[in-house]
Image 1 (cartoon, rainbow, N blue to C red):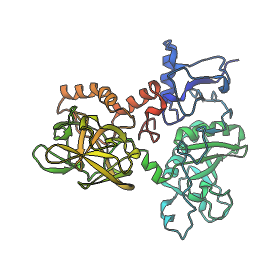
Image 2: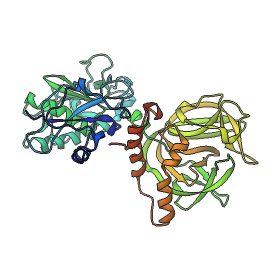
Image 3: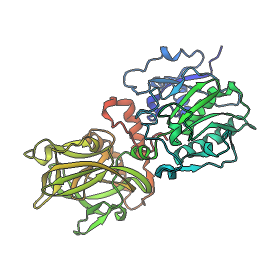
Image 4: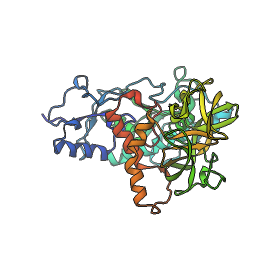
Length: 442
């Protein structure tokens, strides 16, 4: 009997099993061409417990079984995988930690927004409208899922049985108390559809999906703050760099072709061309790591997954400072700052976090830049600065040949997203920052 499943490595999609139809079609094409690592099998598909990834295909989620949804009625109704990703709900790899109950009288109540989507049926047993209240992230995912449900089953709508809970009906530390979780069914209450409904919820972008019982599917999302932290590498819009003319300008005013202060391979200061922005999102909220130094005093804000150069003692020459994730920097370490003359070490006095609007990640020809007088890498997410500089060589070459033909857009550039996916296939899991990269696979 023909199986309705294909087995694919989730490593091909670094944010879990949020597989898109385009990705599925690409995998099937690779299979038809005989590509061995695509690991796609038709006919008989072994149980998930018997499928093992080949060496080099690593993923925190292991392997999953994704449905083939190329024709109506072909989708499976299995629920072999009860939840996705295969980690506890309130962990970093899923929806994140519980941040406290939200009451109508609390300051955080403004984080909740009502959902009046006519394509979603809200049970609202309490007649208070509580089930319609949720975080913006949850609302966006739910609205996306509502469209998928109508496309999958014409005439059927998404139904929400539980949303925000203000009455204490759920277990302690339930994400329902924060408006970050919903329990869902289909409007026809056909339980045979719930297995596929759970898979559609994963595709819609929910951070954790659980086929909780035969009665409903439970879905939850990260908090707005933790979602802001999953950003790859950026600096805030107001962070300043130094131009070759000597002027100091905010990153939001920098354009490709500008020459900014950077660090050369030998550890000396140099001015480097700005080629493109790897990420440019003026209106997006981001969580930043703040590194403060003393003697001299400097203050740099950058995303946790961004790289900057550190050493454990001040006698190390600048060229031997090691690239380190911002979230791993500790007080007592040394970073490089712009001084007179050249670059000099400065001791880290304090590390903190804050959330700010706007995010900019310029790529220079040297792969480094000096922001707020602190030397940082242009790269993020992957721990090896030199490897990242090598991987971006084709992009640097292209912009050298096509200089002036590119204008800054918004969002994450497609090239780092491609590299991130390839890196997940080829590199060890420990090579990446746990927060990953914004936009990858989403």
